[in-house]
Length: 306
Image (cartoon, rainbow, N blue to C red; front, side, top):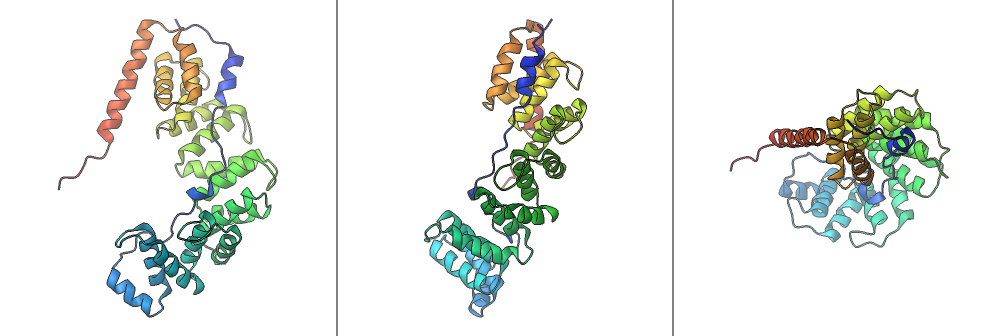
């Protein structure tokens, strides 16, 4: 039989989740993916002053897709398109200034200038990027731009706005209800981190009515996407029977999967919990781990034959 663990000790580790405000470098995603790219046709159109063609060339030279990567040419074409009002080019030109890439010195003032131009056209990604920059500076205007992007359904903006309200700070007063609102939207779109944090909020009754079964549901969804913190939290819930029927083997499985991703909370909890398990329970848990991995492997896309 599993040795009982003190509830107060368990509750301390239930709140393991990660909510940093994302670094700017992770946000500068090029808009416009998916169009067909014909170099000769695009060059010809760009020579005639077509802003979209100029943007596509800038993106091609920036990414090295279809042409050899060339930072100077990327900057040149982004700027040409941006000066004609192309929001995608304005967004990506801003990214170069924000990161100090493409042969330009880092200049956040210039980055915000171009982001404002793009965001003023109602494009969700630059609205999100501008909101992030302003939030990092503690500017209260950040919420306005993040909300504009989030209301358009941009998952990253919903996550960033939820993060911002959850943590609070110079840009916004901490508000768990608003955090829950936006993290719920991100979770509904399948974001594993939002699913885990939403589970934590239900577990603790922050911004939502405390509901342990609902917490388990969201931990489960995040864990099924291999989010280490969701795996850890779900494992703990199974270990102690919180919001779900206690199941030592199932708890062992999720904690082990999390620990294998070097999740510190899972590692520590598993050591303590495992010491109170019988050999049969450990064997059953290990079997579940192996079955889960085999299932994951069988579901993985098979390499295509050439």
